[in-house]
Image 1 (spheres, rainbow, N blue to C red):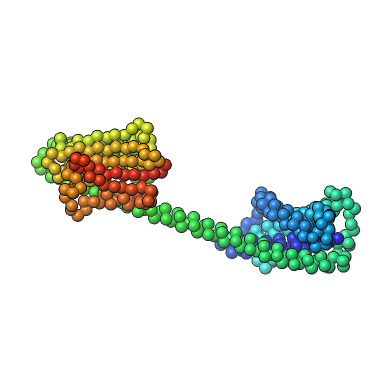
Image 2: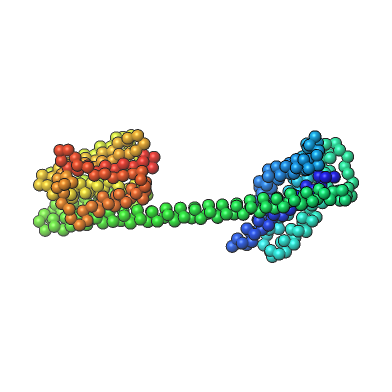
Length: 390
């Protein structure tokens, strides 16, 4: 029967699949283990759609070659029955052989033996199944190997050559794509770790900056007003306790950030007295929004050091938050000496530079920090960052 050629096509195609998969498992650094029943079923179910389509196409091709298109549906039924039975036998054997520890050459010997045994079984068994479904008489076993099948066997060999290339290339591309995806994922993990390390370094630079300024002022105050210095030290200790956990967390909320700013400005008020006044404007609807920790403090600190402290009268600081579209706008406004009159000394822009670097690492070009001249005087530091990731 001409349909017997399908087995060879399916056989060589699965041989190609077996070759690709066997190389993949052999080169794996870990020893393969015996596959479980669930694994076998899952892989067979995954391969079944391709096996079905390939078998049906083989039936159509055979009908075209033999000129029996008016009976193409019969060829398709026989082809699918033979092909799916071959898939069940050969693919199961391949998975059992190449997913177990053992010598690679011996695995190939076993696979060839399985192919030689499974091919006639699948061919005859598929014909029996198809004939039973269609109500056709079941031919004797010897008819499958009749000399009249030589031409169809040659056709099957040509078709099998194409099938070999198809399966080999498919397995190769699957391995390459998996390796590329794995390398890409590994590179992303390394990049995220590098960015996180850089952000932690920048944050570590901000915190000692504030500590140095406070301790330096305490040192000078102890000699002239010990009692006031003691009160400031107590407030400073409370502030450190409040900020210890938050400053080490990857994210905080606007409410927590504003509470820390309130504690910090309260500490500065004890040092500056009436020269420092401040307002915090945070709508209730924004209190739960996430925010990277210690993002506002260096800007508030700059406003005090470079805006209010150089002036005799001091001034006022206003910290506010609002939503504009899909962006979160934060501003630190002071009524100090302004950008043009602020003294420029080494390290006076550490807080601004570090904040910009943190924004770049966290949000890229989607976030920005701008410094503007306030009217009638002073400076406004504006932070704009994505609302959904802020």
